[in-house]
Image (cartoon, rainbow, N blue to C red; front, side, top):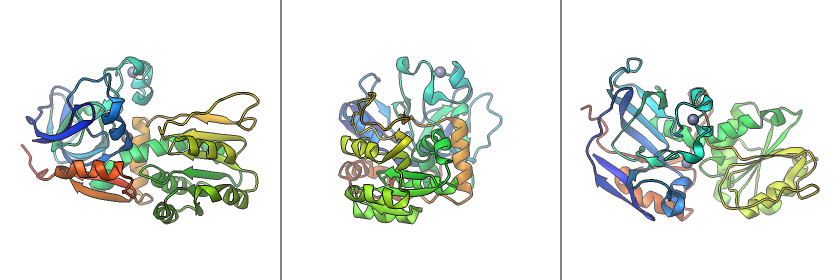
Amino acid sequence: MLAYRMTAPGSAELVEVPLPEPGPGQVRLDVLAAGVCHSDLAVLHGGAARWELPFTLGHETCGRVAALGEGVDDLAVGEQVVVHAPFGCGHCPRCAAGRTNYCDLRASLPAAGLGLGLDGGMAQAMVLDRARVVPADGLDPVVAATLTDAGLTSFHAIQGAREALAEPDALAVVIGVGGLGHLAIGLLRALGSPTVVAVDTRAEALGLARECGADVAVLPGDAAAAVTGAGGHGADVVFDFAGAQSSLDLAVSLLRTAGELVVVGSGGGALTVSKPGVLPSGAVVRVPFWGSRPELEAVVGVARGGALTPRTTIYPLTDADRAFEDLRGGRLLGRAVLVPAGTRRRS
Ligand SMILES: [Zn+2]
Ligand SMILES: [Zn+2]
């Protein structure tokens, strides 16, 4: 089968590898769709230092069950599923609760997830533990794939701030309307959230933000006036999906007293926490990572209700290089998703 593998620092290539066989407790999926994430670029260019190469990229996957390993009797061949890819030790209390994203042993694990040090979904097929599979029948596979990271990470970030979002007339700001940010706007709407102000540097992303349900969508220079106009006191929650210095500085400036700053993007910006300092009194800062398996099940439920409409650009798996280049060049609106050919095979 074909797989898009990281073979050396800075390089990935499409190669032929043997079809993997599921062991006890595992399943093999025919991959139907695999999302391309900024983390994939970060991994390629320095983020995989501790991991053994090569491995197949892809941590955002939807597939169809193609083969069951010994002892797996609660899934059927042909069933459509999505993959909960964060890797954990499997034994600590957090892993036992499905919170592998916050495994107590995360710092010492040999990989961060499927597609992040372990073979992932940018291939015609993949093998994984049954426990990492969440049923997702009835959804467009391309949409379903985006739920597992772009959707799940956004959902988890929102869940962490749900008390602040429940304030009367709460105001949420979303900075960075990319693969994750546009889904966060849709989720904030679907979960009954308050006024949403979206901020991005690209005019086309502002259009997408409005389509996803943002009340106001503005360039960074207009964000302060928009927040004042929408709420008066500043933002109850600011989600920074860029995490760059400029976006963090903007995020802090928009916060209301006792507001929450949720830094989702890994753009390399830094924030000095001091008292007194740049943060308003009572502020809370969160740095969420991905999401739990129960939260993925919840996101699938939200999507089944029709409330999420991810914007995607589809590439054949054989065009993975081009998808990565388009992401790197900032030419994508929404999420890039790779679709393998020949996934109808059953053997
Ligand atoms: Zn990702
Ligand atoms: Zn663990």
